[in-house]
Length: 410
Ligand code: CTP
Image 1 (tube, helix red, strand yellow):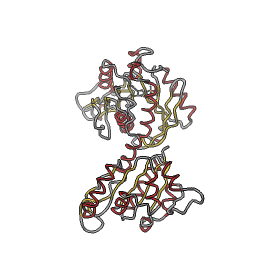
Image 2: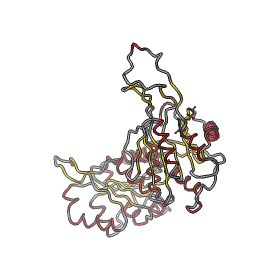
Image 3: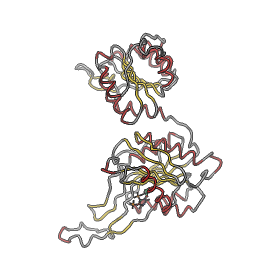
Image 4: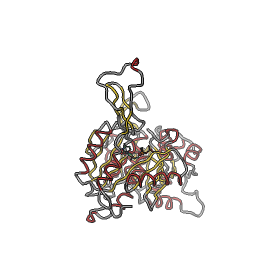
């Protein structure tokens, strides 16, 4: 997992860096916290050490014979400073290396994300504006502060952006456009289907759409044209994707079959399609008194199996399915995924353990990407992080753009 340095400057918003630290570690990142001396007036070293699981250095003179700031700066995959104060940004513009954090910043080659927090007057002061402009020109990502209640009774611009917003900016930077899917068309189904019973009832499932949407975001970041076939989702589709709504399995089937006609390069079936639907849709609400005898179920079409059968063998598109299983044993998961690979004819199955419903709706996950002769994973962390790893493998399987067909049909 990438290594992130979390710099914390001395401002009241320093307490929010603790929540950011938690988001980062929960998503699986290795985090080293570097607070300034003033940051320690607001949050103590034990909090940062306990939550990061790493020792916290504050001085250039810690670390014995190691040149800590150079080691740390060079080995980081990303540096985030939250909160970044007006003073810290002013020092950064002229390369003043008066503390460990400023030294690390001078040695860093990784992307730098700054999340400023200060009073409105300080944020709007011409000196701060000039410093922000200069740092942005040098390539630093500087988030605009939020507007809202400040420390005192006043309201204005200068609040630290929400930790989740900073976290999303970090992930976007870590997975910045690799260009691996430029010129490719990727179709992704997401969310859960709803199979209507009568005007008020349906059969549904717990899918939130988060993994499918994360895949769409990762494919877009890699430069693909993305069509998102959306069932019921708890979240909005990402900007930039072409969205086709398909609430029932039958609608989703029709949409996928028609999209196959566009000859996409890849189809990922991340949607949780209901396996059963009511035999008949009642035009009127079924009354309790009618009992359960009128409620028959039939199987829905297996869309994944059907589009794989339509495609035939050895030709595009690359088709990836998902499997939700209830075992934690990775050999068992691989075996179950291989069974589904063979049964459905897909190129790969992304399998996860959904025991206790712990994956549904969560921001984090753990999966294996199983092909017939290769297993990638376990891939863990945020659903976006997992999506980037899947997109990376997908680009490998597709091969160079001019080859036209997947490198291999596993
Ligand atoms: N799928 C589909 N159409 C269906 C049901 C599932 O396209 N009617 C797809 C899902 O989008 C997923 C994959 O099939 O990519 C695996 O679905 P899953 O429900 O795990 O497998 P099933 O074949 O339904 O087997 P079982 O429920 O018995 O495990």
